Image 1 (cartoon, rainbow, N blue to C red):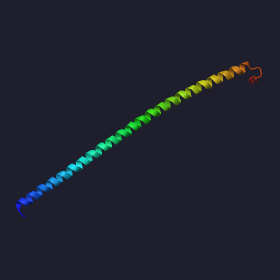
Image 2: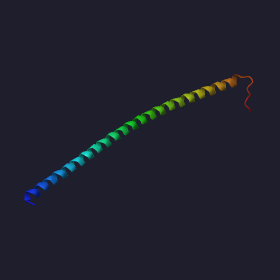
Image 3: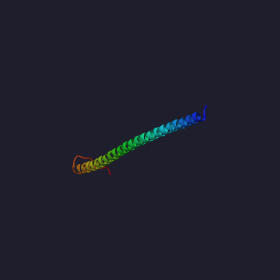
Image 4: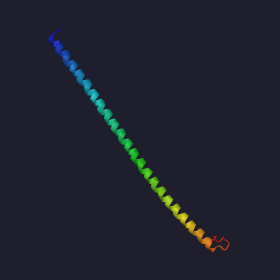
Length: 93
């Protein structure tokens, strides 16, 4: 083999290796961007779910507060009724 042929083969081999490395690098970059996009979507979904859960908690708290108030009102009405009702049993002393 001539020296020129060996040099050409080495240059071609270096170019092929460089192209393979470039393709692999681009593939890794593409996969990295894809993973970033997927992670961003997961974060957005988590944020949305957290906001919905917080809203549901607040609504439940409001509902519980209304129920406590209604219970207190009912208790007051029951006590008034017992005071007024002539048929109610007097507390044992």
